[in-house]
Image 1 (cartoon, rainbow, N blue to C red):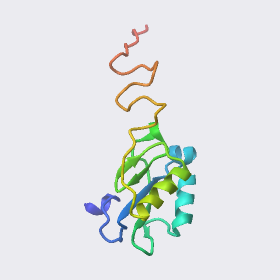
Image 2 (cartoon, rainbow, N blue to C red; image 1 turned 180 degrees about the vertical axis):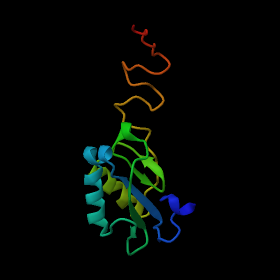
Image 3 (cartoon, one colour; image 1 turned 90 degrees about the vertical axis):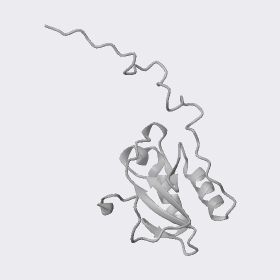
Image 4 (spheres, rainbow, N blue to C red; image 1 turned 90 degrees about the horizontal axis):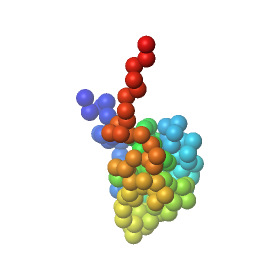
Length: 134
């Protein structure tokens, strides 16, 4: 059963920091593909590979339901939201140098908190069912 879940790394080596880049269409279009290209190029590794120093492993990840804050990467399964390629590079470089710490961001400062509805949106709590038509 464990082979079904890609998050279980049974046979592949992983680095001290495991970086997952969301590459599904939504994240990819919004910058995930650029983040992948930048990190893969900088680190010299591809999918499920580890840097020579064993510090960083890199993985392409499908959707993890964080579309509101795309593009997203994970670092040791902590979500890092609304990143740019440059911000992802800085994060990975800080982690690689040993001075970085994982501080998940609570989302983009211009967006509402994840628990709040989008301004002006209808939520399931405030929605009214349409009257049946005949």
